[in-house]
Amino acid sequence: MDKQPQKVAVIGLGVAGLVAVKNLLEVGFDVTGFERSEYVGGLWHYTEQDKTSVLPSTIINISKERAAFTDFPYPDSTPSHCPSAKVQEYIESYVDHFNFRDKLRLGVSVEKVRRDDAGNRWVVDIQGSEPEYFDKVIMATGGNNRPHIPKVEGMDKFEGEVLHSRAFKRPELFKGQRVVVVGVSNTGADTAAALCGHAEKVWLSRSHGVIVIPRKRDGIPFDHTLTARTMAFMGMFESAFPRLYELIFNAICKKMQDNAFKIRPEWGLSPAISVLHALPVISDNLIPLLESGDITSVPKIKRVTGPREIELTDGTRLDVDTIIWCTGYEADFSLLDPSVDPTRNTTPKWAEAIGSRGKPLPRLYQNVFSLDYPDSLAFMGNLLVATSAFPISDICTMAIAQIWKGNSPLPSIDEMNRATDKHHETISGKMSQLKNYTYEGVGEFLTNYLNYAQAVRVGDQLQLSGGCFIKDGDLVFAETQLEQIDLAFENVDKALKAAGGKGWEQVFRVNSYHTEITPEVGQRMAENYKKWMPNHKVIWTQIGVRQLGVPTMYCEIEVSAHDPEGANKE
Image (cartoon, rainbow, N blue to C red):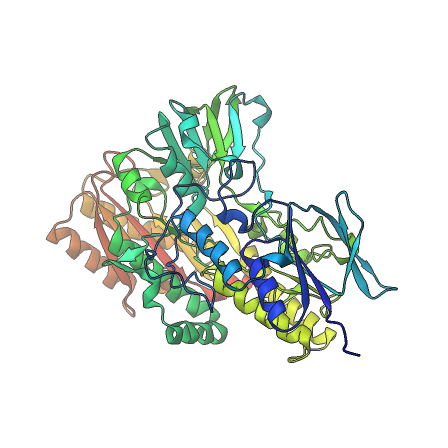
């Protein structure tokens, strides 16, 4: 008698869930997919309900050539950067092409997934129905299911509308309103852009700088330059030299940004934190809308001061009607029995890390396999990668299929735990090394008054701007730009040393901003380079601007320094 195929439940039928169903069916499993919505595709299916979804105006950030399943390309007629409706059509055609729609149960709400050790099986509790039993389970509910909303002092005073980006569907409903969009991310940029032409005023509130790059370079999708050979080399380079890889990758992304856009200092997008900590914003219209004034970049919200008034960290107060939080999501494992929740034992160092922002870090081998039941419980959607979810989910579920089929065994439990510990140690170390510094006296005054730091450490990097208005501990603006350049170089050195660095000898990149660029200005910069860095050279970008922070400020210097010794002391 033939052995019956093992039964697998896939919970969630977004991109990851669908490709899991298809790939496990292909190797002989009996697969059933469950989805509480009446449709497949997850966030790629536009809905006006309070669920995470694209907008009708959404354009994919990664080209169709990079954002396709491995064995099912987009039609040739589809543009490289297509609208979200085309993505949904593609997903539907994928299901029909591989003929597994009969394996999908839509409009079915799974209430709990629990382990029956006595029966060596998983129990799936379904709303309004009897429990069902499976040999294996893939949780494909992803990370975009529980909105993350930061706590802000006085929020209970605000009488305007407050919503998460998940609930933002129709920008025309905000006609004539003054709206603050919180979070400079892909979602934040898209939301702010969608409001333009409808809202009376749009502010984009930022908590840190970020890289912004366009979808195309010289008419070619920027990701087309990343060949398989290049990606493989980058992966090996990152494994061997992680710190150097981060520096180079940041520099490449910064160069792509600078080739496409002129970033004004007043927007607060620079210095950007590492792209390994915050993915670049991919947008063709954010910078033009900032230039035109349709979107105004402002600092972080400090507190709510009235029924429709907020105060920013620089002391500015704004009268606003609506706050839209584009602040991401938290992974939600509440469908699982607590005994198998991968976040129940979050690494203590991660919990203490500044960069964790209170979010749990699931303990999963390769970010996929349960360490409690690796042979029967897997998770999708817990990877943060700078590429599309389509091919990544495809490859991950191929691996799950082959491993569970017995064609490629997992390491021992001890080995998997050690690998996960090492992975968590690396991540926690990066996130915990985010620290602000300021120098005594006038530096402390500026930090208290304008709520910004003179330097920030991100891992083994120091990022800072050198003020040309601090002389001998006092707020002083020299009369000429040449004198201000000298002061800026002095203050960069002070700030680097206050942050535990060695000064200019560790600087590898300089961006200088000038209200006027003349041969004399270039010569004075060169003289200071020779004075402060006699033994090495830096990457330098010189940028002309109309105005800096105040009318009598003629230059500003922004630097990145590499300080691995200081990082190890933290």
